[in-house]
Image (tube, rainbow over all chains, first blue to last red; front, side, top):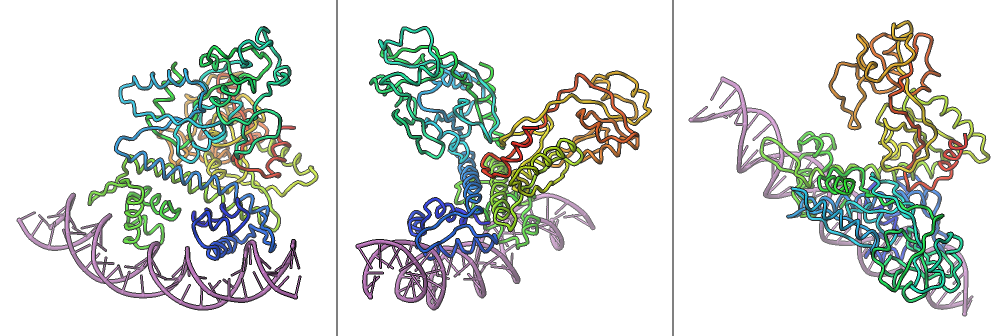
Length: 279
Length: 279
DNA sequence: CCCGGCGATACCCCGCGGGTATCGTTGCGG
DNA sequence: CCGCAACGATACCCGCGGGGTATCGCCGGG
């Protein structure tokens, strides 16, 4: 199967509309229609059901959509990583959630930078649930992830530390003087709903809380008295005096891991991992 | 990047010889040379160092080789799984090492087959270290793996059971009457070397023992008095009366896991996993 | 009933991927 | 020291396949 055809199919499968997909691909609609027919002929499988009013995915089509996205990501990763490896001064890209584990990250970067032949490390900050994708499609080479919030399926990893979680509140809130809270109590604070995190596809669950995409946004909302949140203990290090925390013992512990794609043989990634695990 | 070009590059990078690579790709050498040049130009990177006597990989080239193989496997997987999903009676392929965990496998297949809407399960048996590849390139959908012998990097998985290991010997061997053996003792039995298992790339380590590619071969060699082997306890169930076992308490325990690629949403795979974990 | 939206078809053309012939370099053997 | 053979690069040619425009056929809604 040609990657071009697969890209075309993924566009159509996502738009469920040949015209819009063609526009997105910067091409005309007829050659797109033919390319999809060709692909279906070659696979010997019907991928799309076209009734003259709507396009829907068949079973085989949704399988190809999922597998095809993964394959296109892998292809993009090959492209980007080869480019980076051949660049004048090859560096390595580390991705992490904006506003999370910043002191740990600083320590790792320091420890690695002091190694004899350390490469340049570019830090890429992104919203929740985008990190895995950056690792898959080659925008990043190595990531700091947080289980169980992030899934580590598809990657090699080393665990760095495990910590409990705390409720983050505006300073002076009545509950701030409690010694501990249960998860159930934290979820039901009048006027301070827990935020909604995005799914991996970028959508948001329904519910009362504000929709956020990274920790920085979230902390700001808490400062404004619009939300509360259950976060790892280490978040305390970066809170200003306008925020305070209460332990939540029954919240699941959060494990910070350093993760990388299994096929990497990069010395720089290995060095970073070594530095991180030795801390 | 076009998948065609990537295939060409991988062929050249593996052969390190344009002529042989062209032959393998069933094409002439000149268009192959040009395709690689085009790829290098588009990436803005030198992938191969050509001295008129030898071709060698640059740093960027070996990165692209590793990443490219993964991407081509993902592409092949998309192709095969879409074909299977669109087939007349879509089934699911389970892969495992020939001769390992056969009773557990039988139980899983039975349990799953008794579910209401169970799909057809094709069992694919292969040698050691080939299973991961079959899962990656779509020849299989789900695998029974054995840690720490197999790595599970890149897959979602559920643990099924953990067991100790035993030394498998020809019946009547003097050591057969020992109540237990250490790993060190097992490795030094006069006349009965431990076998050599293949690496993931298909090569074999150097050493005295016979090179084997699956358990069936291995058991036959032990029967013939040409080898001994440390294997999971459950292997005992399939030994004939010509073989016997001795516990090896200090051998690392073996965990059998059921694993699948993270992007699968297949109901059949989910059913198999459920059946396996419920046993 | 007609129009508008949408995917498929018809038809054309250009470019690129592939083929053959040949060159340029270089290591090696006589 | 020269010539040959091995090997990748270059030159040149060709055919087809992927892309474009125009249009059709189907269907649902006003």
